[in-house]
Length: 363
Ligand code: SAM
Ligand code: DTB
Ligand code: SF4
Image (cartoon, rainbow, N blue to C red):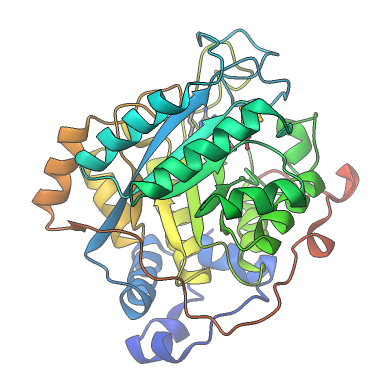
């Protein structure tokens, strides 16, 4: 059922006057998520226009710097050692190889370079030292440097900050209630603890999730609630559609509906007006028109380059052609959100997983 509960906030003046909030309830978010699509996209567009430069998109390039053999059992992930996906294990890349890839990404227009390692957690030692060197190098090229390395201690977060890291990607993936259906080797609380370490070190947070894991609409709302009630909001919110990879437990999952991705992006934009909302994995399943809807709904970044970490992404030429066709300019990241300086509020206490018996019923 869809309910029109957004009408009071769908005039430009109402949107401009609305304060940035960190106290959203599940019901409010579920109502926005389920509102009529045209109204939802319209409201998200107003919020986007009020807070950001709407005709701009940031291009971020991904590189898997250490591939496969991960001890975690994330049910969507081809890099987990628990499953038999067609991914060739690769040890940590050399610093020079990574910087060559970063230079190439910069030449073709990326302004952010995100390095991913299939680790459960960071271990101090020569490999972490090499990652710090990569971060210094990427930062030195004038690119935003982002890494996603699994769990992190506060001391490790500080070392990454000192090396010039812009952002740390660490996704919540789904709701606290559904999390245990997808991952059993770590908890939601583990995830939130690492995010606290990142925030305390002064690194910006890149945190989002995936649709198409078999979750309910309520789960989607609950994940957005956790993100939107962080204070400050994550500076970057990647919204992924599941890439179904053979050999993973979710390979037979029903394909996500592109319009549900539009709904997630629009709702994220409404809840977190100044965050960068990243249209992330799953773009090879989207038509050009569906991607345009995502931009109208407030997406202002894409992953750019023929590969995500291990799976396919649209060709760079096709992306540039699409952006040209719709008159969108590619830009470096916007300045950090001008939210009042406050002591950040951890999401940990508010979002502990509930017992399965209390979990929201599946839609
Ligand atoms: N090991 C680190 C971690 O989990 O934080 C970093 C790498 S991990 C591959 C980064 C993110 O990619 C995951 O949190 C997940 O949200 C996303 N991801 C992985 N496999 C995916 C898939 N098949 N489809 C969509 N997103 C995926
Ligand atoms: C994010 O949210 N999505 C990106 C990035 N952050 C690290 C990763 C998507 C991975 C898709 C599956 C793969 O290519 O292995
Ligand atoms: Fe490992 Fe990250 Fe893949 Fe989970 S998502 S299996 S932690 S690489």
